[in-house]
Image (cartoon, rainbow, N blue to C red; front, side, top):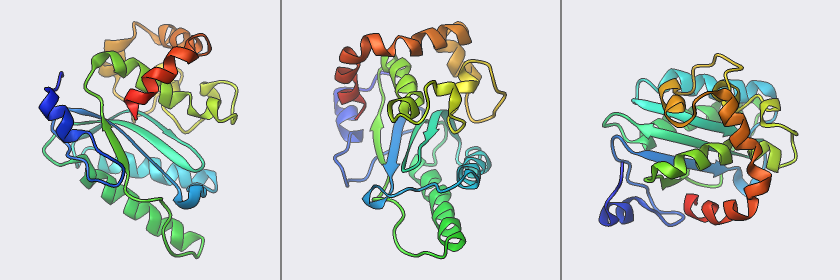
Length: 204
């Protein structure tokens, strides 16, 4: 899973540039609403997008490892298993979402700030932190007290409290012995926050 320095340089992007996606590698994908406006207005919006993920992930050979949908942005941790670049998956899913959103709310124009941004995650040690970072987004935003209270992430699958399909059990088991171990790891966030800010620079 280690990338050479040359390869890492080729897949790390500056804002606005296109990402090169490589088979069998891992990526943190994120985007937000144009002018930070909401991209989800009601529960049905979240559900529609999650259904699109479920319908298209196998077609494009994408594994969804961790995700969190927030009112005005989203985070995805994905693995590209096939030769289709992740960008094809993102384009298909989010074009459909924007069209449905604009039609439902009788609006036009941009919904997102621009193309999705991405970061190659090449170090297995960072897999732990990216999952926790993604799942703690609603807590950090003050929307809920516990990540388990936010329905639109796959935290509950990680801790064996929901049987969803948008996660990879083998991947989770490779990182954590059981759900209780992940709960403990997530709860340690407050104590490690100062160090975590340093890690966050790598993830972005």
